[in-house]
Image 1 (cartoon, rainbow, N blue to C red):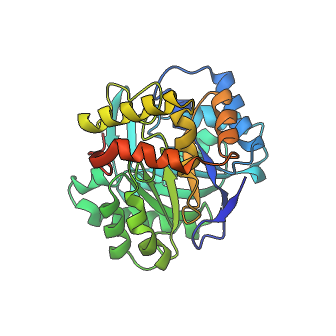
Image 2: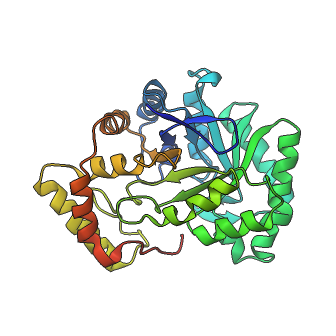
Length: 315
């Protein structure tokens, strides 16, 4: 496992990190015992960053992860969770107020069974962009509330997450220098979309640590294929299906190529993937130890062709 500095945070994170969204049963039902084993396999394999959110499974992911972490030394991992996006009884909710942000942090700590959060992120800020106050509320209210918790010693570092890269840039540019220490972005550094590359210099100049996520582009780059709810435009879905078929024809699972590609750029410190299956965790750890087939990368991206960098609105 390779480790990289996460911006100016002082943290060195594994090139592959563990996303705990699957522990909330977001994609399908889980076996909690196997989910605990998946977390343990990630730590044993050298992953030292675990990312979760109260939104995933509407608190279930944090609850399951908290039980798994009881058996793992706190010094073995950095923990990231989020504020702003929630849910209850199957209904999604959003609240980016200062009061709710601070309450949420303490609630997450209780569910996770910890007394310190290494990274706290404002979750999917594009939703606040369409609410009263817009993104300026994140700048004026949400982030200062989290910085206050940092000053109290409850959290280590503060950041933001979003699918939409321009939103991340806007909040960084409109926040006091040093407020945003990390950003988490998903589906923009993978085999079918490398738009994150256009922003690397911007984040580097500000010392911001970058967390990449969803190397399989939420299932587009998998043999199982995109789930029915996937918001990607249909031409992109079809292009990815052709890419999957091509990889199968040469005996190289697209999941393997996608994982290898996602961790191949040393300017991107870490990439999150999620699974509640320990076999998948161990398989992905093995994948990234093997050399990537760059010729196959070019073939896959040629197949995707004009659908490269086609994005969608978050859901």
